[in-house]
Length: 162
Image (cartoon, rainbow, N blue to C red; front, side, top):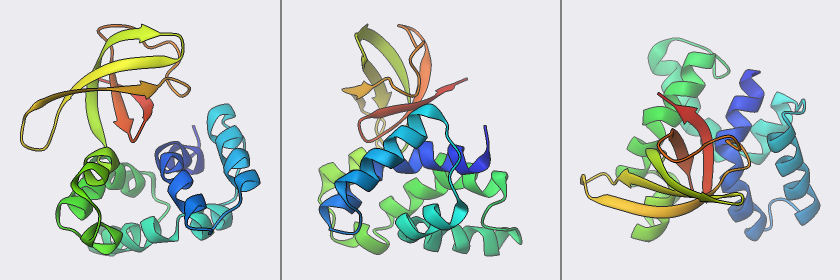
């Protein structure tokens, strides 16, 4: 998978909030979804424009590591750990975000407990180590089944995990 598509898969769940803020249209949201689900080509410029807040933090991380914002290792580190640090530290828009939004915004590793249609019931440990369960859509991890590990972000299973 191209780095741009990997980025979009993780960032897409935030696109609905971006639309609610009036920064993209419903049509643009649907185009992003189609691109993310179907792994279509998308320009870096489009991603940087829509998800400019994320790229502010990605640029911080890239500068610390002496790498490019589009280095695959940087994008992976951002979503696998740095993104949660940003949330936990209350940086940017998370300074005023309610606790539930912060919890949904975190990227977590979860175990699939059950699957009904395109919805997975997953269990994960929150940042305090408490077991939590929630439903997520399986559009990015369609073959996932009970017992599989997946990465989750908002209401989506993003990718299978080890």
